[in-house]
Amino acid sequence: MGLGDWLLIETLGTAESWSVLAVGTAPRRWKSLARTVPGRVLPVIAAAHATGEPVERILPKSRHAWSEQPTRAIPVVGPDDHVHAVHVRVGEGDSEPAPAAPYLYTNDDRRLEVVSAGLGPDFDRGRSVWIGAETFEYVERFDDALDWVATMAQATPGARWLGEMTVRIPNGLRTLMTAARSDDEDPRRWRGVIVDITDSVPPQRKSFEAATVDTLINANPGLYLAVVDTEQVRVLRWISEPIPGLRWSGDVEERTLPHPDDLDRIRAARNDVRAGELNQTLPGLRLAATDGSWLRVDAEISPLPHGISDHDSPRFALVRFEMS
Image 1 (cartoon, rainbow, N blue to C red):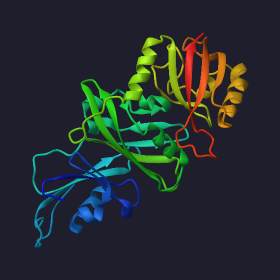
Image 2: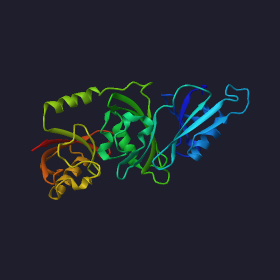
Image 3: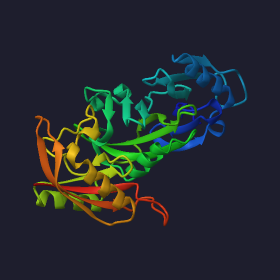
Image 4: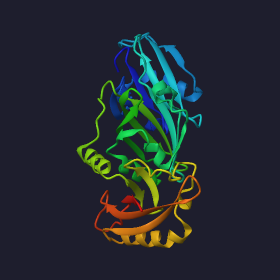
C-alpha cells in the first residue's frame, strides 16, 4: 500500500473475507487485505464499515513509512444500508477515490437496485431499479454475461463473482468492474459494487461476433434476437433492439407476455430444446403488445452451448423472432 494511494476494499461478506478490489482505478481482483493493508489501518476500515460514516485518524508512531500518517476511510453504502465497500487512503494526496456504486441483486425477480451517484452524473439514468433484461440496456460489451447470470442463479451461500464490462454513457464508453457476493442467509440475494476502471482498462468495442450479429440484424428489418433461460423461459438479454411495441419492460410479469393459448406450444418447444433438440420453431406466436393487442411473430429457438457438459440440459437458448 503506497502512501497517498486510494484503495477500494470490498466488504460484501464477513470481515475475514474482505479483500482489495482496486488501487486507484487499477484492478486487484480479490487481493488479500492482510497482505496489502498495514494492520494498523484495519481498525479504521472496520470503523467506517461499522458506522457507515467517513473516519479520519492519525496512525500511531512506528518505524514504518505510514508512521503518524493521516488515514481516511470512506464507506460505500448500499441500498440496503449495508456498507458494500470502503475507500481508504494513508497519507496525503490530491487524487480522488475511484468512482464506485453499490448494488443489490435478487435472483428470483432479477431485480437490480443501484446507487449510481458514486459513478458520477453520466451514469444517472433517472432511475435506480432495473428488472430482467433491462439490466443490460446500456451494456456495449460483456463477454461473461452468461457466466454472471448462471452464477447468480446457482444460489450458493458465500459464492462470489467478479468481471468487467463496457457500458455506454452519453459521452462514449466506460469500463466497469463488478464484484458481488451472495448472502449467507439468503443466497438468492447478492450484494455488489461497481467500479469505474476506465483510466486503467480502456473500454472494449463489440466483439467481431457481436458486430457480425449487428450486421445481420441491420440487413434484415423485422429480425429480433434474444437470449432466454430454458428453465423459466425468461428473456435474459436482447441481442438486438427489443421487438417494437412488445410489453417487455421490467414492470411486466413475463409469464403474461405469451397468449394463454400458446403456452402449451412454448412449453413443448422448451422441453424439446432441453432434451437435446437443436432447433424448434413456433410460427404465429402471439405476444402481448403495449396497446393491449397481440403481436404475431414467428420464433425459432436454438440451444446455446454455454456451460453444457455431456449430461447437462442447455441452460440458455437463442430465440430468433420475425414479425409475421
